[in-house]
Image (cartoon, rainbow, N blue to C red):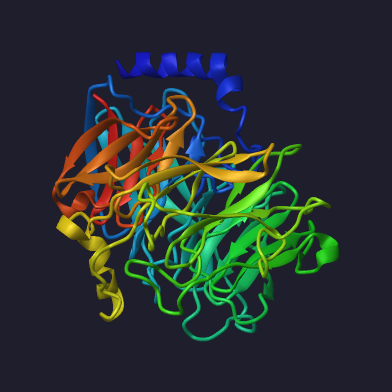
Amino acid sequence: MKSLFQALLFLYLITFHHLASAASPPKNPFLADSPWPMSHQGPYAQGSSDWPGPTANQNLTNDYMPGLPVSITLGYTSSKYGQPAEFWGSSLFTIFNGEARDSGIHRNLFVGKPMAQNALSGAYIVVDKDDAAFIPVGDTSMGKFVHHKAPFLWWTTSQINKVKELAIPSAYINGSNDYIVGVNMTYDGHLIVVTANGVVCSTDRNLNSFDCINLPDNQEISNSIAVDEEGGIYIVSNKYMNRIQWTGSSLSTHSSDGAWQANYETGPEQPLPGRLGTGSGSTPSLMGNQGEDQFVVVTDGQELAHLVLFWRSDIPADWQPIAPGKDRRIAAEVPIKFGNPSATSSVSEQSVLVRDHSAMVVSNDYAFSSSWLPGLLQYTTVFFSNVGPNAPYGVERFSWDKNTRTVKSDWATKEISCPNGIPTMSAATQLAYCIGQRGGKWTLEGINWQTGASAFHYKLGLLPINNSFYAATQIGADGDIITGTFGGVVRIRQR
């Protein structure tokens, strides 16, 4: 049955690929040829996919791979017809390699790593065209890993090899509490990393050496980064939305090279409940391809969160600021109310899901705050984000109208809860997906992309092993959904 499904899926992609990919960003030739080669699916960090996910008429089951907390994102290696889908992940103490097989989800191997001062270090992964995984090790080092298989007598040996580890030069590190946050790859195959205290570095895929710059004004970053095919690197901080330019040989903050910096509404100086930092709670997502209106999309830090679009490259000559005192680079700033017209507060910590010129956000407005607790206990709110009144409800989709050059809300629902995970969307099924909850039990939610109506939900269970805990909902190679959880990795697939 699985082989038949794979064959039909292959025929579908060959026949309808031009339709599914009409709004897709350009493919980065240096990434693994797979459905999900890096965090947020690709350099544009849209979080959407051409590949099909589950549908309402499928008989679903789920697999669980135990592990340590928490694998925020997983990176698939190159797709090989007839072979199990292989992926990389990173937890607090380990880097691991696994496979999504017919019989379930299995961990091949894992290796230990030093625990970083902050759990975000190691959250983001890139897998290149040679199936090497680039994953932060500790706080300020980047590691390159490969899964090596070799025949030995009548069985096959398997091991994870750390090819190289490269540390950011100490001269650039801003304080003893600095750590790598964001990871991405340029379209000419250079790795880009950014730290929490505003260090931006580039290196080749052999990790020969880091070339680094510091963002001005002591900026703090709590999200990953986006990259476009022209070398634009998009970093949102607690103060600014930044475009740093990769020239092909160096990093630049000069406007003559295409770099810019824009103000936005960053909100209070103390993080709201469940938030990982101040300012925007989202990795920048890129909207629009060549020849179209092009934007950088984030949610801001106001008490009533807004969806904010920034002109990505040249600002139209006739463009005026949207309001007095607003940065001219802002193309739109729209309140997120999740269907409540009288709402005065809203929170969305997860990255904005983008497809074509539409964007979807989920509510992460928790009732209880645990930010006053020390260390990892600060995440208690998120651990119990499926419980009673603490569970947030709300999903909303917006679209850019190229004729009026404005953003409007397409639909909003107050009925669906996606408590803490990053959502995704399948262009093939026209469904959005998130790890949700109903009555305290964790679920997979399928949401009609055009209307916001619930298409289906699949029950996972009450235990925290199903708690997505900030992790990305990802679409796999066989029409399945895979996500990191507080207790390992969960995969939802056709039975």
